[in-house]
Amino acid sequence: MNDVAAKLLNRLSKAGDFLSGEELCREFCITRSAVWKHIELLRAEGYHVDAVTGRGYRLMSLTGRPVDAEVSPFLTTRRFGRKILYHGVTASTNIVAKSLASDGLPEGCVVAADSQTGGRGRMGRTWVSPSGVNLYFSLILRPELPSIRVPQLTLLVAAAIHHALSIIVPGIVPMVKWPNDILINGRKVCGVLCEMQSEPDFTHFVVVGVGINVNQSEMPPELRDSATSLFAETGSLFSRPELLASFLNNFEPLYDAWLQEDDLGFILPYLERYSLLQSKQVTVDQLKRTISGTVCGIARGGELMLDGADGQTILISSGEAHLHKENYT
Ligand code: BTN
Image 1 (cartoon, rainbow, N blue to C red):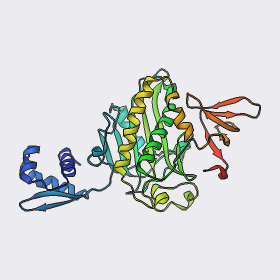
Image 2: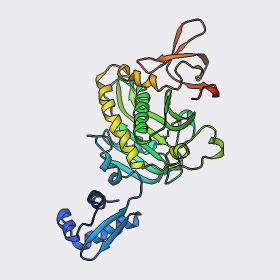
Image 3: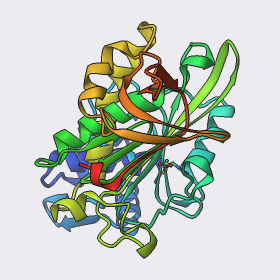
Image 4: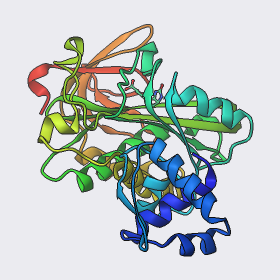
């Protein structure tokens, strides 16, 4: 969508009523036929715009896509999400965002897609990304910090998503599964994939990729036991633009606070309160070893803390934690 069409959409959306062609001409410094041309563009993109002689134009319905014009009315941020680059379909928003970040796109820009053909998860997994139902987006960050601190971002993002879900979806109890999953009733509803380009003492950029199963009604058979969506859990449909904005609204102040702090200490009480693994027996698979123990917390650096068999506390900085099914509550 071009800039004028996006601004026109924003204006019509905020007005919620008829706006005369004349008013729009004046406001956007364009001719009547240019207004008409842009209204036609909006219609071609799926927006239902009424045109009534003598009254003007009225926006009848939005598309529910995570585009600038539909997200911005919900935003309270200063930087995050103020520019959203939307793709109807793309391979992976993380791949697009990494390339744009390499080209210099500033912190706070978001790449969002309606569907992905090569959505990627952690450990080389795929992220199933059907169109029209879920949220797939990547946020560009440029933290002026050594790269050793960057892995903490995954948990910070998880906390912000958890909070956004708690606000937008009443009656659910999402849980954070260290380090990057959000689950509802034992099934995964959201995953986070952070990727960075860095040198040891300098971080060029981080791309925070988030996938949230929002309105998907059917999970593919192979995911039915392990994945869910907000719709599957509640029977209600949710606004993708509002959920994206809510995440960004929650995350920006958390991120700014984290930049000022030395670690995740300030958010640990929240993370431990909603940690699915807290006080549970887990097995963590790492590349070259498997470690078992009882989870006794999350360390300030974001590591999972286990009480090992010999009574020592083990700090786990990466890996996949497995929990017995009866513990998924
Ligand atoms: C995981 O749980 O393994 C992480 C999943 C991350 C999926 C999101 S969808 C948007 C962004 N683009 C991708 O290709 N992956 C992330």
